[in-house]
Length: 78
Image (cartoon, rainbow, N blue to C red; front, side, top):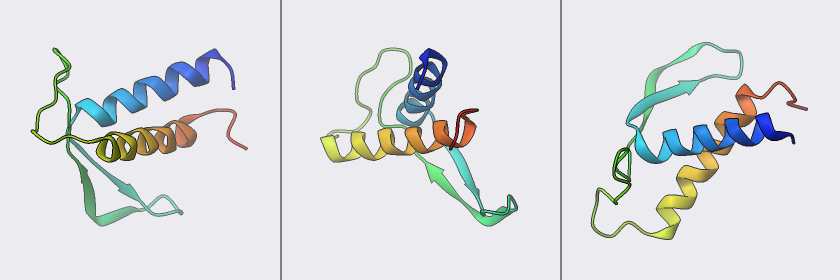
């Protein structure tokens, strides 16, 4: 893991924590009929929690999702 991989992972994790978007594709690359929705749990500009009751499990789920996205986009994927 080099610095570029760390920057990529950080950007993907921040995207998962602060942006609403849809994602999903099959292993062969074809899109799903119904995409999965990611819902932001932190404000992108000020950084505060959007919802009351944001817990560590919610944050860790977003971090893991961001790490999976960075693995998919990494050039050093093994």
